[in-house]
Length: 453
Image (cartoon, rainbow, N blue to C red; front, side, top):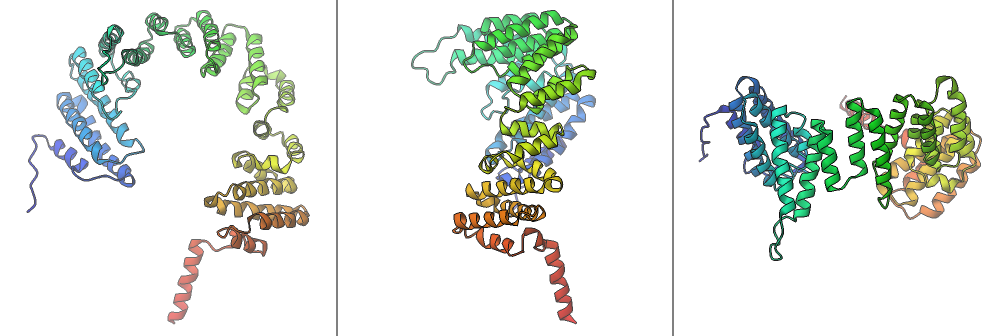
């Protein structure tokens, strides 16, 4: 006998329950389809926010409560279910605001849920909710978060209280939330006060400087950038915010009419780390009539950089002859050490103009795979060797191909999943010569038709 579902007062509640499929475990392979069905129900609730916000609030709360039960029946390593829950929280806030609900009550309930979140759905949720809070709700949320921050600073933990959060951790946690909220509020004074109270970081300096830029205070912003560099130097391994600070400094110098200083700073950064990214930053500050000269200067300065960076830079700046010369003087074992992300674009580019270099690059990619015993990439290795063979033949270097064949046979003859296909390639039957799946299907179909006549 099939148990009937208890009727709900709201038809959308029935849809929520049906979509969540209570009691059924959802494997990873089915998660995308499962969440897509839930998204459709969430979209129906979202349409009620403007016309019937109170109903929408109730439905969002029901949906959220159900999700916290369903998560125990779900294998969602992709995080798509977590994204849905975040969107439900945001929808709930929109509905509360549309219905004119008390901002402090909204903030209090949201913080209660964040504190009771055992599945990480609310981790960094403030990054999303600040985008939809109106002014009153943002102010109320900041007020309550600030109270929790200050309360954590006064707490002490008893030695036998092992299950209670460490006050220092709690204070850092709410301090991080406050930083996000003050930045969204563009409250520079509050942000500075909090940062100095809890420990100013280079990232804080970048945030403060960015807020000052939005308020057209470029000089003051530049002083915070410089302060950020000083703070970053005190970090043992430097600061991950240093790149952002350097970029902001150059932009500020340009805005303040100090273009020469911006160019000097860009050149200094480029010389430390030549790459396509620092090259682009440099050329952005070079006057148009001087770009050719600065380009030559930049390329000359980059020739001592690491092989991958200089190859990428020469390719992106279309310095193909310099690139060809670089590959020509690079040893084979050095090419084999490079990722295919670095060598494959070069090999494709050189196939017509420099087939001898393309052949070496294709060979290096193939050897890199088989030497590392990456069996799941043997198909790619065979394709690489096939293209190397053709390029060696086109360049009149059949002897180099024969040398490659001897090397592979000597070093990899025990690789039973690779060698038979490599031998077939040597004998003239490479991967590109094999029939595709559809070609095989068509041939089989024609054979069946002929036999039926």
